[in-house]
Image (cartoon, rainbow over all chains, first blue to last red; front, side, top):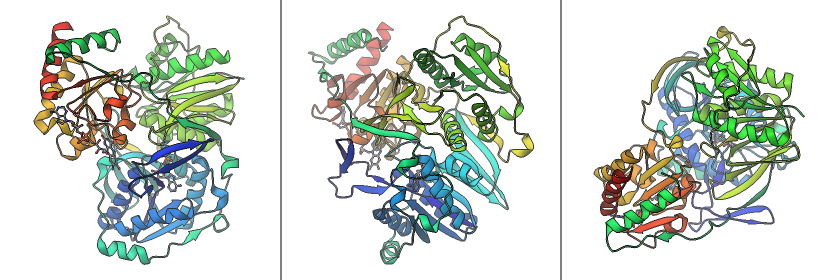
Length: 265
Length: 323
Ligand SMILES: Cc1cc2nc3c(=O)[nH]c(=O)nc-3n(C[C@H](O)[C@H](O)[C@H](O)COP(=O)(O)OP(=O)(O)OC[C@H]3O[C@@H](n4cnc5c(N)ncnc54)[C@H](O)[C@@H]3O)c2cc1C
Ligand SMILES: Nc1ncnc2c1ncn2[C@@H]1O[C@H](COP(=O)(O)O)[C@@H](O)[C@H]1O
């Protein structure tokens, strides 16, 4: 049994965005504008743990993205993944989640023995959270989302805990399975010194469209969603009103007046 | 053109908050398109839910009452919805963006090769097209997006739309049969541990939050007291969560919960960009911080520059007097 983690390279959380003629770009003063999608760090950690604790033979990291997404995959190798695969082709640019799902599903079909595929709960750029279930549908596997614990993998059965708005649900299902994980599941490890050295020496194979048996359309032309109108958040009208007063009591009384006027109490 | 559909998410015999918000938003879309609104009511023992869906403004209800639908498992819900959408080809399908709602949108879109716009905070109708405004890049930018397929699927951010209200409307639902047998559903729900009745952050209309400025676990006491008086939920910055002062479920921000309450009171929170990502769509933001230069004041509508340990107890006392 192999475990695969699907991870995306996204802008860092401190990136500052600008939009020019509809084109989005970003910079990061820390000099690292792109990172492993923060939600996917939990997925990478969990994949490594499935290998360590549940007997998977290999943990493999898989990314669909531009060639520079290799950087994110190196982080996965440094953390402890055994292999990383980049799926990249100019024709993939502009895919929506469904196009992405078709590509990832085709790549997963090529990985012999993959039984558990782990996703983050969402990517912090598009923030859709659709991809895990859509990959599962394209593979015909069972999706289980918002997983907060992998309790047991026994034969062909996996027991999972999910974190939903109203509580924790425990489910069992059959392998192969596609899961998405939430932050509660673990504490991601830092890359080790040895891991970083290994990652730097690794050559990451790239699979192109020609290497895959993709069914259905991919890329901008096949996208079913139009996102072209992206813009900066209009500045909030007016500036903050700092409540002044001679005493704390006076200030809070004035604030409470305002909040009643705003009808938010 | 054909009808607008809405996912009537229900649990424990009631339509949950995002379900009511979805009905309200979908009613507006249906009216603009000049179409009927069809409520989709799936579950077990849901006759009352169908009645409630009519009352909240649905013109028609397609219902399925079956044991397999009891726990909202996507493998039971998905195929039935896909079959219904193929048969009726609704113009739009509006879904509240809960965890289960997102799964529904993803499944249906994957099987029918449709697009989805997730996390809408505003909707408008332009000709036949439903255009949704939604935050992208963790709320740092906005996009106006739409889908191209025959059925336009949109999920809504919690609390971004007002809940539908009682209209007095009634009707009889069109009850259909489930299409998947229990034996063909691999996933079994073997346990559920409810959260009890603490106010959940995403549903709360008021949130009182604490950050590093509260200084320690006991610093959340005055935060909780104010929240108690206001019937509010308690939020936190990541700094407070990482310090172990409060559990992660309370974290607001890019790697925590995204919230849109009517009132967000930030105490001892500097307003880092990642914190803003989770709370900037709040209607009224109040910041209490002893540093008048803290970035949170750029976002806040009202601010008090002072020690939170003085302000919070005074605020609690003032509300106790006036509520
Ligand atoms: C990948 C990543 C993801 C992140 N995700 C999130 C997230 O989801 N949510 C989040 O919140 N952060 C997140 N962060 C962290 C974020 O960058 C900030 O570090 C964090 O929000 C700071 O929390 P804070 O405002 O409580 O603390 P600080 O920035 O230390 O601010 C404390 C504030 O309290 C004020 N203060 C102190 N004492 C008092 C007093 N007695 N009375 C009044 N005011 C007082 C100070 O003036 C200061 O402004 C993330 C960071 C990274 C790298
Ligand atoms: N291009 C991609 N390559 C690999 N994994 C991806 C890609 N896009 C999304 N994912 C995975 O799908 C999850 C949900 O992404 P999204 O649906 O875009 O919010 C992410 O957390 C990743 O685990």
